[in-house]
Image 1 (cartoon, rainbow, N blue to C red):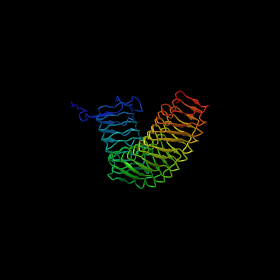
Image 2 (image 1 turned 45 degrees about the vertical axis):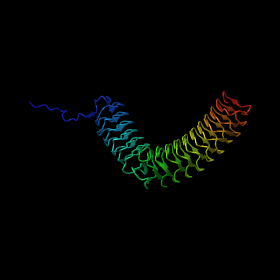
Image 3 (image 1 turned 90 degrees about the vertical axis):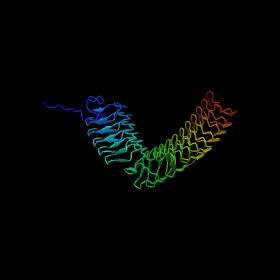
Image 4 (image 1 turned 60 degrees about the vertical axis):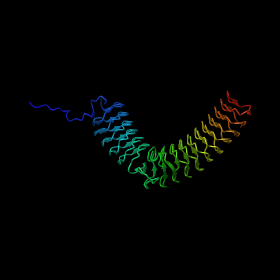
Length: 427
């Protein structure tokens, strides 16, 4: 009688094979690993069989013991957060059958040192490899047609600049203060300089963006704590959302005449920024554009700007002077909230509405001149301006809402138009 062999004798006990019939996989075709099915499981090595087409959202999220993943040919999609913060993952095999790598798929996989993206992949999602701090090499095939924002942000150890289709996706690790951008680059991608130890911490860097660059994508320098100097070329037209947000060492910047728009949160939290030159070409400044720029003392707003949007200068506690041009029609919610060094403000005739909490808590504000043309002063617009002693309210004002000048103890006398509707506790 033939001797029976133990079919499991040569199987690594640390390996988990996931395929049809596994409790983590859907019961019917197309087979896929269920959402969060293996989340925080103590797996060490995983083989995903080719009959599984999709690895679901959060499938292996926070599997901190997972060191190796092999996907067999047949797997087509790696979904959102699939291997999010699998910090021990050092080896991953992605087959040619994979078409899409989803958002945050490998974000925070600090153990990964190299990734070969196969020729079948067409799309790499936002933040797909964000925070893979030990990743030294990435191969992106020609098949890829779309790469999401900040896909490689925080990949601090790359041996060479990661450039794809003339877009700088991530700068290489460098000990030099001056960062040289390759001549082939025409676009600075989201997260290219952001969030990394090689551009933050104690090491300071200077960046001169060459003239061939026409686009700087949103968040390109986000949280680049070591950035002390950046030169912008005349070839760019927009400073996008969060482009320089939280660049805490950046002290000054000259915006070229080619720029027409400054995006939302473009300079949010640039706490050392004390000088900004905004050219006349700029017609739009986004929400929170200069919020919490603690060192900013003065700024000139170009004549083409029609709106100070919400929270544009919130928390600019050193801002002591600002001139609003005659093009401004609206001063948005909390636009100057907490600008405690501002001593006077003149609202031009072009403004129709001073929105809620526009100057809330401007404790240094002594005088306010509101020119004829303003129609509404909304709720809490000047609330908490504790040193305000003088305000001129023109006949054009039709509404003064609740709390507009509340908690202004030094404001003893105000002449209000007879036709104006005054809210409760407006003064």
